[in-house]
Image 1 (spheres, rainbow, N blue to C red):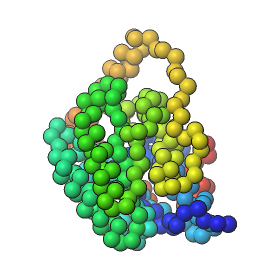
Image 2: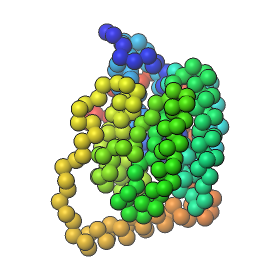
Image 3: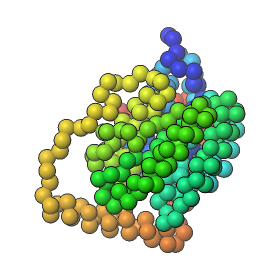
Length: 267
């Protein structure tokens, strides 16, 4: 069997986006799968029969400082040949944010990984136009996206371009919290990651879903109220009290571990 890529030791670092929130693993209560796990399984299946190992150090709620300091140090100790380095999303949600500072810290981290000899996979934020309250993040997301592409160009990194994905503009690609991708969203993202790494993906990897039928206004209003009560208010309360959803959470796969399609739940 001929290998389709050169990677055998993949480490994911980041926040809830890389941990895989919403894409629940039915085999383990409170655990999630996510695009990074799905990417790892694909990389394992196309490793030409050679052993493939994967670690995921990402933890929900973590800000960029944790990703580029503690997580990055742990990742480099594992001597990976591929690192997905995705952070800053929680920082961008704060009332005030230094986008240039975020870019500078990310670039230092990318340079450190590249200096170790490993490849880097970054990911842009989404285009939030038409996404209700999140539409206010448009300028921040656009600037951060431009910064990431510039960093990648300077250091030879790969970019998972959520900004340009048509499919991810569909609300059904997102979970009930409207922040984390749904299971289908994670599937699309793992294809986007593969494509950014130069690997073969299905032709329809980014095709939008068939249009959903219109929903009654009363139903939509009820849903917005439920979202506010269930997700928005608790998020604000955590911010006000200095707490994080990941305060008591540890990395789901802290060591490089043999990983393949059999480690994903059945479809």
